[in-house]
Image (cartoon, rainbow, N blue to C red):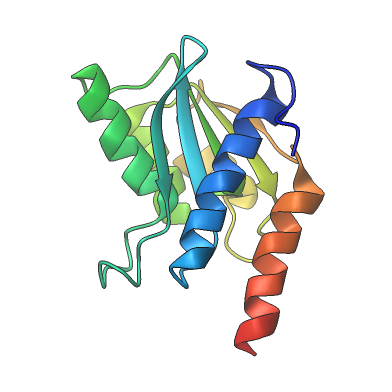
Length: 149
């Protein structure tokens, strides 16, 4: 699999997809995330809700914790979150508190995603970019739920 040009949205989303595949191997909902700062990945995470028996252990939440620990501060204004599925309201709220600079997601979540709540829960300076590698991101999650049903 070609990873795309270094430092492109596609490159970093493919890194997040690798995390989603790690979640899939653990029978977790296959969502993966990476956080990028100065064109370097500073956090990699995937869903761990089943593993940790914690409904808040979404990929984004794990990544925020790892990135703020790495940087030694609680704000991520100059960082970008790449996540395979549009963040939910909980993760959107957390992105507000860490003041993430940019959120880039692959697949849309029309039922629980932040798009409809953007002005209510996101930091006003947070940029949103959706649809990066959308098909690949949709396929992994759709196939997971097809197998569960």
